[in-house]
Length: 338
Ligand code: MLT
Image 1 (cartoon, rainbow, N blue to C red):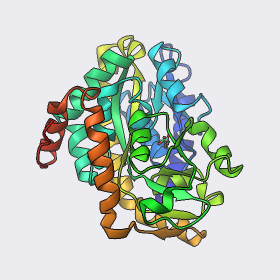
Image 2 (cartoon, rainbow, N blue to C red):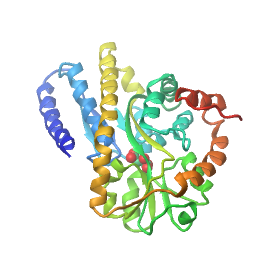
Image 3 (tube, protein in one colour):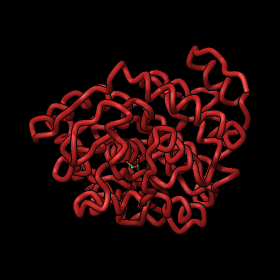
Image 4 (cartoon, rainbow, N blue to C red):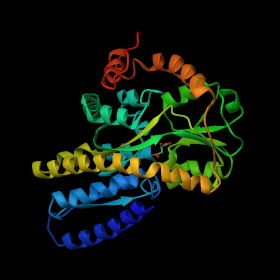
């Protein structure tokens, strides 16, 4: 876990730099809310952003991370940033969708099939349009993206490899209509719940399971309360760094450029972080006792049920079937018919 140690050192460096600029009249120390605990992709994106921001502003501006939902649930941080009481937040894209429905293009089940797909969609014209829509709809600007890998299903009861195995599980999902509909397509009525309440709900067995990427499960210490993992690939988790649009507009043109460039640098760092860390972290979770299964028949049953039932339900909210087809074209896949 050498890289994670390095990130710890970066945190110390950040604090020193913050002290150095404290005397400057217009020095800023932005607040960044982070939904996950330390040791995951959200923290890595945040630290990389801070390092680049300091560099781009010659140490004048810095930022501090508030991990583990200290500044509120992920969905609450979108509201807080929209009204300008919070500067930045790093959160899962599924928790932005309720405020900016077209972002749901990226949370349609089995839309994104690899990290490369995720990079193409977020960093190309599709992503740019979603950024603009999110400013318009939610009052926040996406300036960077963390890539966290596929969300795998975890539970405390039994190995799951088929849709039938899931039927008696109580599964927590984010308050996201597309994810709720996906579980319903598998015959399961999931329990929508804020991210900040999820660990306690798993620990007290109010729910049996949840899904999130390996790195997130590690950062949240879910191995302490979950035993079985199923390698679903229905959602590739993307976690944007958002800035309050009113805070962004209050910055000078130079400062805006520094913030945007820092977001780009952090995005590039995040993709490499996932490539470097995911396999190792999966191994650590196995060493800690998690049992990993692959879905039967190459996940075919899950894929067919979810794509046939869920996609058509959300064409309208994501902006029309043509938006879905633009995303599919961007990653070299065939269009769908309405
Ligand atoms: C959620 O499940 O609500 C989110 O994916 C959690 C996260 O931000 O990692």
